[in-house]
Image (cartoon, rainbow, N blue to C red):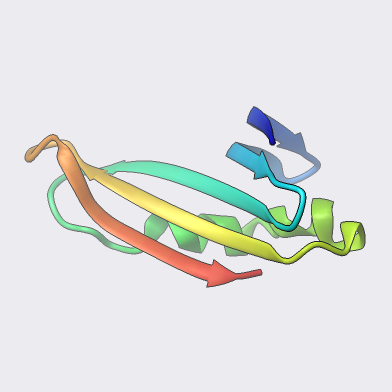
Length: 82
């Protein structure tokens, strides 16, 4: 397993990349005022972060996690195959 924090791409930085032998996970973390808004997963897709690993051949999974500033807890969690 390989972990890469602030994984640099030509479109920005992936918050966390987790490379396993059989697949790759790309994580984006967002702090939101209160309720989940889908911003984390939307950023992964809008900035085409998965492009960096498409030629690798392993399945890609985009993971968006949102934390509430008010509740101080996870309020949103979305996963999509990339």
